[in-house]
Amino acid sequence: MITVPGEGGDENVKVAVLVSGRGSNFEALCREETGRGVVSLLITDNPNAPALEKAGKLGVEGMYLFPGEYRTRFDPVHEERWAAAMKERGIGLVCLAGLMRILKGPILREFSGSVMNIHPSLLPSFPGLDAQGQALEYGVKVTGCTVHYVDEGVDTGPVILQRTVPVFDDDDRESLSARILEQEHVAYPMAVKLHCAGRLSVKGRKVVTSPAERSAGGILLASNEEEL
Ligand code: GRF
Image (cartoon, rainbow, N blue to C red):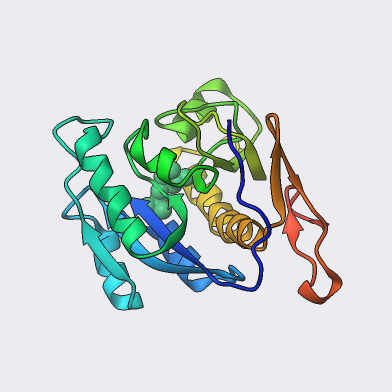
């Protein structure tokens, strides 16, 4: 059960981005318009993550924290430390962006309703690893990306927004991934902006977006062109 925190008020929301590698979504979240959401922390489970260097250049605190000995999940003792580091810094929203680990405990508990992920397919199609390869293999003509709240499953939480891209006959993983990534960099900042403005609520599996106040201006959502 996911409960999204209430109205955002006028306060900024400190955002932490958790990554394992490149960090292009982290960079987009730092550079693009995210309203009251302000990226103030990057944490990685990979001491060689290129994202650490990006954080340095962008003037955002970046840190490597040991995740435990498991390969695809956290050791709960160490996940506790990740949660504590974010709590100490007053983080209000946690954005997973290419973190190659499943969250099961402390982070989801501590930041209940305030953990998001981005996935390079139109969920529920092609969850898990190599979503772009799965889409090519299946032969779909349209795919895209999904920003969703995180629950205890793998890419199963309520969908916040999705953006679509065409799949061409001569696409390979690289060309398709690049086309999807462009849309990821639009979708994630939008989702953060909506969340931090207190405009999202979860009803069952459905994330409902309340209309923007006139003064806040419209925001592009879901269909790539519809304006709310
Ligand atoms: C993205 O494709 C994202 O959808 C997936 O992992 C990749 C991370 O890329 N979850 P980057 O590190 O943000 O460049």
